[in-house]
Image (cartoon, rainbow, N blue to C red):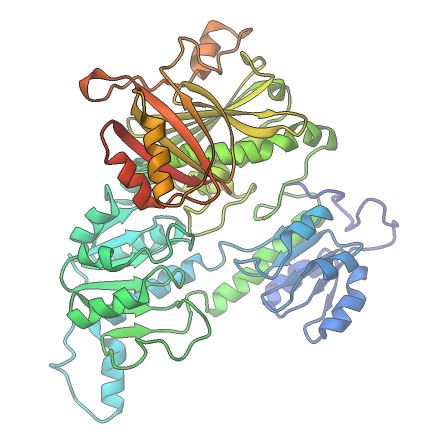
Length: 580
């Protein structure tokens, strides 16, 4: 990413006087290496002891600021920072930064998301060993004057199966280290390619249920989203092996506390190691006392001197890049593009993100190998790389332990072994502009297409697996595959009504046309065929043709309701998706 308004060399922004060096404020303590890097390029002031009032009074003098978690960069403070061009966050999260306000002011916000991945993986291994060998309990016993060698006997890691839920960067580092102990590693993450599993010597579980059935130890490395909150619940524990051991060094809330307590009480779970909790700080967690088989640490996953220094240095690198027209690889807000391009492409960013999210949801359950983003019509005449980034962002959002943004999306896809391909055709039949997203997951190929309608280019879905339809892409969308028979829409409406679900709109796409929506009227036959989606021509029982139904609602349709509909005659698949 190139920071807007920067000029390489000399440490000056465009518009600044030739004799003025750029000024950067380090508002919180970071490692010396980060401060030294900044001083090689800019005038640096340390404001680690400033009050909030002093910061508000003086921030207007600085072109860049570097913070950690204590400084609240809210809209009011950003509004006082007339010269500010970059906010560097020495850490992973940016909860203390009003990113929207910064974006409106053209300020780059960058963090250091890779600063703690090694530290988090090592802490996972530390807890894994402590859990297996009862190390904390043995220490407490011996220092209390007891020699309980036989009571504290543990289990070996060698040839045990480690199940990893979430196979992103941290999960992969844990897998590498676990294999060094001679463990069999089984991972489940449908958004990582099968080739990546093979490269790391890790077995791919077809489902979380398969992982539960075989794992001796289970560690979670997932983001906390509505889909993953309480993921390890009573149902999950019931599917696990007797005597399984559980670890969570990712996010509090991924494990249902009451279900874990019950599983420990019953002996189903032989032990647990927890570094994160639903609310923090916390000292009265139910498992803190009376559970000698539970190992706990106060959110130390990222707490090493090296990680702290790395975070400071990496965020300083991003500040230097932003103020020198370099590539800000960890920016969390939109990259800068030319105003004339943004005028055309800007309205299509939400559509690209939503299509990526929808296509990935429809492909869920298999290892994703490829994401294709095709741009047809007038938008093909512009630099569509930004739209491709939005497609990847939508596809991976909420499915990785690190938040995906428009800048880190390609690297996030690459580390998962997902190939991203962009295609353009200058004309699109029936539409001035069309975006088609195709996700390939094993033998499954899922395609959706959309366009912007009206002066505001409101996102609309116009194709699902070759079925033509038109429906506005609202926040909550449910898609069904079903036999093309009368009465199916009424059945969905009845069941939704029974559960108090209000339908905003609905559209149906019947058997695919011979020419799909994306075939360019003026394009070559080869290009048109290449860009046309692969129609879903599969048939249901009895040879019925399959149709697609898209329903939008004012709330996300619960999984149980979708499953109830799919379990009825004539339905073959259902997916409820939150698009934003």
